[in-house]
Length: 126
Image: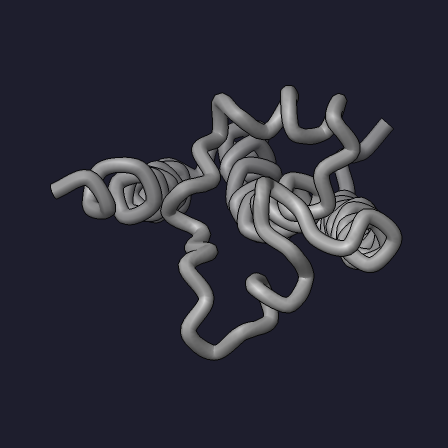
């Protein structure tokens, strides 16, 4: 069986975007049904001067927020899935380059992944 990189990446992108959209749509519905989320009313969240900020949504709080059916955390989950979808494509390409033993593109893929994770996880805390 041959590994088809383009087909695999295509499926990964479709699945990632579909899952992301599911979480975002459910989150928006929950915001309207519960008239807000994460301790803020819908009017407070929608206000131009809202105190609600994505920096207060930590990854560790997402499981509890999902269990509490908090729309804010559903939307945050959808956004994180959307962020990791293209990263998955780079990982799939890395596996493909490893299977074909293309050392140049293996190194380039690793550099891309390092830069992405460094930008996402380290730079915001500096």
